[in-house]
Figure 1 (cartoon, rainbow, N blue to C red):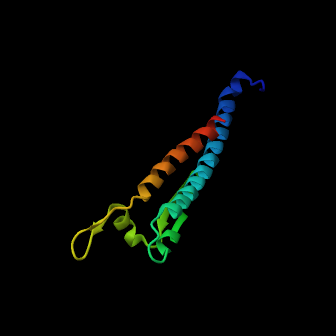
Figure 2: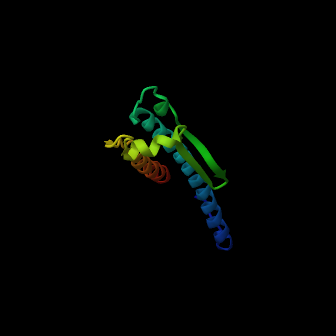
Figure 3: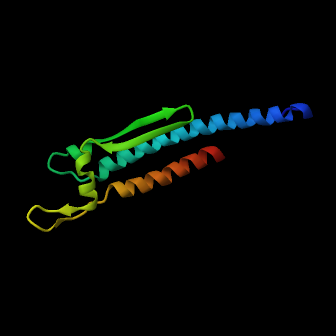
Length: 125
């Protein structure tokens, strides 16, 4: 705690707020990176194997856009054409359906919860 002159109070409050904003930005960027990596790891372990395992191994977490105040990351598969088919199921060529194998939606839900938890804990603690 330091003593602040009444004339300098506004400047002292602004300095404190700017410091908090910088801390919050760093915390949020780190939380986004940690969450994207955790979601990728979960998808690698819960994805269907297939014959070659290439789908399971194809998950990537990459930075889409980063600016001074934000980081946008994407978790995607190199075999993006079949993600929807595996997640939702699809019709077979000769009739019938292939059962859905939901693996993306649960990972997305876990990621949203994890991100909220990481940010909340870091800013409160």
